[in-house]
Length: 553
Image 1 (tube, helix red, strand yellow):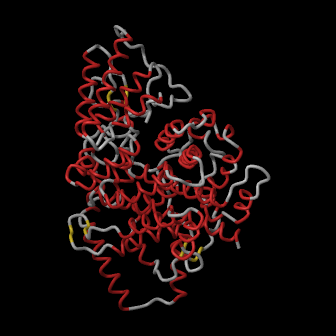
Image 2 (cartoon, helix red, strand yellow):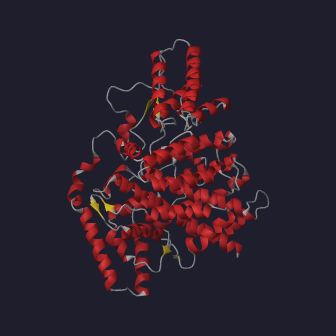
Image 3 (cartoon, one colour):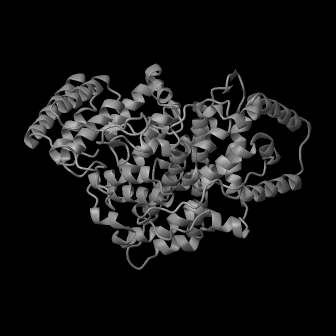
């Protein structure tokens, strides 16, 4: 939450109460406070032209003129996002009252939680599903906000519940690392992919739990212990197969500022969580939070209904799904995919490929996955604002594939999450192994037995192909899987989307999101993004945990 003075925090927390009377009391105090602040500023002059952006936005993400603006932005967020209808209505009334007194109030920028998915589809979910509504209320009570990631994940309430439980435990419950360290590691991980959405969220959380604002000037201002994590962050995010036990030893046996094993496991889980969450954020086109930088403006609307940023984001034209080029390919896309799944199932029953043939198919798919071009746009140069949270901004996934470096094969039979990683995490950071396992299983097994408009469809073959393709890009091989199935089930536009989202998520575009699975629903595409996020996290974790195991043995 962005409202800073300590005594006011209790009031805002009161809005998350399950008790309507407590919410009303909290809201009354906020109303009085806001009205006092409005009266104190007297008649409001016409606004000056907007100043040039400062190099470091205020932590509140509001114009720096006064804390009243922070509060108004917060009220705007609550009026749109609070899961309690009574709070929404009261916030709207209060904003209206402030405007009636001649004070300019903020308005939201953009069109809802996602730039790719219509707002009405996302917000419809909690209206029709009591379970989703209840999860939203719990999340709001815990954090004082209902963030856009949770709103988009709300298409899949079972998964969302597991995700929020795990994230809450990693960030807020007892654990080896101090709370401000956890948020700072989240910032470091998200910054590797230039994910300003997650960086901004955790900058606010970091300050709220008492983090030192100086650390936000750059990694070199943070404690040496956190600086040492920079190399691990970089390798895990872009080329986890290069991680060795020597990297682990360097952290655990440092002369000063060394890490304990338990602290390192906590840090590794946080790094992999936020690398993969950055993939989800870009893959679903998550928009800035209303109360954060880029989520609202105090400027009046322009004459046309679109602001410049909408036009730049391509929101200015009505419906992207009627792309003329795609329509010929689109007809019957779902039926073709279902027919292929049926044929593959029949082939599976008829013939068994030899081990040699299976190994060859894996190597072929791995090599081909290296050649899939990720993005249609030019180099993304991280802004100074983001890049100060990590070192070596030029280090990325792309370099090795262009130079033809070989990704070694990691056989799951030798080191798997189920048999090795799970128990190591659980031993050093109790309960977290269990939570991660449930979250992986939930994403992998989630199904409604539908494909677009078809019901009673077994989608397990398709889910497995997506999961194994991502692991294949990381060099991870399942001996019992026929990698020939991947080319039958995942077409080129889908592979480009997967590769971009998993390896260079900051380059994901709306066009890419729309060009795969055109006949499928948004909820199904969000499900794909959950699979990609969890498969990526597990792949990174496997490499990190294997290196730790090798160090320990």
